[in-house]
Structure formats: C-alpha cells, structure tokens
Image (cartoon, rainbow, N blue to C red; front, side, top):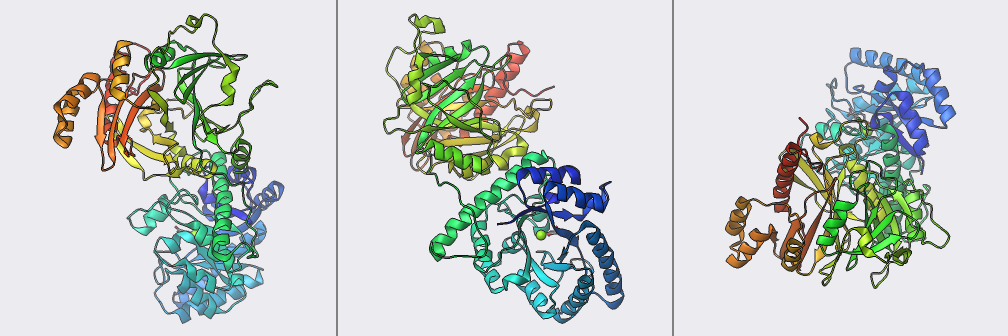
Length: 639
Ligand SMILES: O=C(O)c1ccc(O)c(O)c1
Ligand SMILES: [Mg+2]
C-alpha cells in the first residue's frame, strides 16, 4: 500500500510538515494549496525538498467551483486552472483534485458538467496533468460519489477521473459497496478519514472533527476493502481536518497518522481474508502485523517518586506487604493478592509521586513488543543484568511506559524473584500488612491524557494492546468537564480509563504534563472490612459530603445500616442491573491516589455517578492544602 497524507493534517510550515511526513515514513503527500501560498519557498525549492526527503508529491488540492457554470464563468475558471497547471509543472506534479462545485454552479445537468470537465481535461492534457473529481458532501448539485462518477464517465476523457474520500461517502450514509463498480483505473486518488458519530451539519463535522482511521466510528477496513477488491492500487491518503491536530506537534501527529494506516492495512487484510478467503489476491499489497490476543491482566503498576515515604505509608495502610528491594536497583516491591506495585526511586530527583509504568500480562511478550514497534511505538531503553528478566516496553503517547510481561495462569511474575526483603524489614520504614489479603488484583488504572494526544492514545492502546474503547463520558468537575474514555478487554481483566483534564489543570511550561491526579484502583473482596482496617491503620480517606449520602438514599432506598456504614467510612456506592459497586479513594500524594473497589454481582462500571463527587472533594482538598501550604498536589485552580 502506498501511503500519503495531506499537509492540512498537520501544524507548522510546509517545510516542517514535509519533514514530519518523511520522518514518519510516508511515501508521499498531498500539497494543500493554502500551505504553498503562505510558504516563502519557491515551487522549485519545494520540489527539491520533496526529492531530498524521498516524498512523492501525489496531489495538488483543492481546485474549487469549476463545473456547472455559465460561459463567462467557465472561461474564467479555465484561466484559473491553467495558472495552477503551470504551477504544478514547476512543482513536478501531475494530479490535481477538483471538488464538486459548492458556490458558483447554476446548471445542474450532468451533460453540462461533463462537457465542461472534458474541456478541463483537454487543457490539463497539454500539461501532462490529470484531474481527480471529488463529490463534496455539501456540493451544490453533486454530493454523492456515484453521481460524481457518472459525470466522469460521461466526460469520457483520459485525463478526468474521480477521487473517493471516505468522509464524503460515509458522512452521508452512502453505501461504499458501490465503489467496486467503478473501474479501478478511473479512481485517480483515494482519501481516508474517520470521524466520531456526531449530529451536526456535515460541513462543520468535516472541517473540524475528522480523525485518523481507527480513531472514529467508521468501518474503514470495509471501506478500503471495497477499493482493494475493486482493484485499486494507487496511494491511500489521509485528509484530516481536525482542530486539535492543527495545534499539536506535527512530528507526533504524523506518527499517529502513520500508525493509523499501518493498523488499517492489517485490519483490511484480515477483513478481506474473512470475506474472500485466504487465497484471494489483489493488486494492492496489504502488510500485516504479528497478531496478539488481549492482555489477561495487569502485571504491575509502577510509581516513580523521589520521596517514597507517603506512598509506603498509604500502601501499608491499604494492607500491602513490602516484599523488599531490587537486588541492584533503587526499586521497591509491594504486593497484595495479585496486585503488584513498584516504587521506583531511580532518576526521580524532584519527582513528585506519579504513575510511570504499567505492565500487562500477555501471551507472548516478544511478539507483543514487536507488534507495538511495527506500529511505530518507541521502545523503552532498559538496562538489565544478565541474570534478570528482560522486560520489553514502549512509550504510550502520554509517556507512560507500557511493558509486555509474561502472563501466567497462577498470577505470578518471574521478575519478583529479583526482590529480596532486607533482614530488618523496618528498613523500608513501614510495617506493612499483618492480616489477610483483601485486595485481589488491580481493577483499573486511570491515566490523565494531554488534551492534544487523546485520540492518539485511544488508537495506541487499541492497536498495540487490543483494548477496545467503551463509549466515552464527560464528568463535571469544579474546573471544567473531564472527558473519560475507558479502554478494556472484553472480560474486564484489563481496564484503563483515559481522562483529558480541563486545561486549567495542565501544568504551565513546555511539557504538557498534567496536574490532574491519576490513580490505581484495587479490587477487593470485602470493602467494608478493608476500610475498617485502613481506618485503624490511620489511612486518610477522601472525605465525601453528607449531601451525597442523602442523594444515595433517595436514589437507591438503601438499608439504613448500610447507608450509615457508607457514610461513616466515606465509601461510595453505585448499582446497576447487574450488581453493586462499593469504593473509596485515598488522599493524593504527588499526582497519585489509590482507589479500592468491591464489585458485587456482575457490576461492570466504575461508579460514574460518583466521579463528580470525587473530583469536587479532591478540588477542595487541594485548595485547603494549598492554603495551608502543604505540598499535596491536587488540582486547585492556578490563580
Ligand atoms: O472542506 C473542503 O473544502 C474540502 C476540500 C478538499 C477536500 O478533498 C475535501 O474533502 C474537503
Ligand atoms: Mg477530500
């Protein structure tokens, strides 16, 4: 598959965009006219840069409002076209996109449009240029790809073909199966865009909300499947108008874009094998990736901190056992049930406690890491001694390190042998667990996402780790809405909640690091017992207001004894048709806090109605600690 991308997808100058596209591995680009118009580079210089970077200049676009016009307008349009053809010659380009007329068309009959396209084709032929006619979803007379194709067919000119853009086809609900009826050689170009399912006018949807394939709601594997089956073998290009990508770092966006195409090629290949059988062959080659099943659980979560005291205290109060320090590294291991928390003090100078890494149990760590790297994830450099387990990992878009660990049926992990409890275990500064393990495993992890990398993160976790997105929600907080997206395995063994914090919570400065606290939630078998034990151990719970409990009672008519216990212990409660959910939150240290949950019956959620209560309570706590100048990061508004 030849890959291409429109310069409109990225931020920066035309030169910066071209460098980013080449670095991400694209074969070619579409030059968006606006990017050229504002560039100080001459067309010859752009052409030379493209050659130097090894990028083909695939498509010049857009040329607008040409067909369906009166004679005078047609003459002006041909004059305008010829100027662009001369420019394209300087650029060394031979394909121009023509959008269906949205503004100046007064004549809606296909015969007129075709005749005018034929004239354009004659003129283009003199410059060795071909025209790809695209139906915009909001075209005046032509808004349907099959209609655009009928006009191209009528024009019957070797220099006139069509351009298919998935956005214009899928946004209007046209059936893409019709693509297979168009002769492949008359499809001069293909643009792919995905989009979230929104109900708004199509033009606004198209100009602001397109996303890369796999980041939206559409089955682009089926869309591309129709093209491949129909014999198309030309470039597959991305044309994504998106307000966030236009502001984000273009180098990263280009990698995100490339990842989306690599993953799409794989999914399309799988889809075609399923529909046409493994023997089917097509002119377009689709590369595949090592297949990996879903992870079967969290292997560990790692918190990095310079000062580990508060973390140790918290874990001890929650019933965790200190398992000792690593043989060679300044790293501690704390466990309870199958939950393993690593506290990493290495390279942690001035580091407030923060979630730094997550380990996932997978069937084949080498294969999973190889897949992630083929999807352009950056490997985490790790030094390990000869006799240590080698952990393979990559950076997620939010810089969390994601490690692929060997899953075992009995829930053990080989690397824990590298930890040894010191003779005098009080050296860790905490007595730790004395009673029964009530925590069984990590239930979910909640990570803050930089606002400009949210779609990228969803694509990353889905394509590399096979986690599926649940419907996203928005949680009100005192400083704005928090968008929350759960990524999970079908059985719930791994659940990752990705949150975009309101802008006010982003830390100032060049890093997009967020002050929004992240958390690790542990599953337990008896929340009330665990909470009582934690109270006795002196745990600081997040305080829940009385108003919350009054509302609980109104909604659920709880047994008064249960309600009293919930309120006494600052526990939260939720219920759905499958079961019940009890949970509590600890105070925050650095940017980390812990949650403990008890799922009763088949409850499958996360206590969504309680999330605003949590955010408001944390806001108040952070405000108070700031007033008292205590050094607890929360997310108080920066005033
Ligand atoms: O929004 C537009 O005007 C526009 C322009 C060119 C395209 O290829 C397209 O899909 C949309
Ligand atoms: Mg388009």
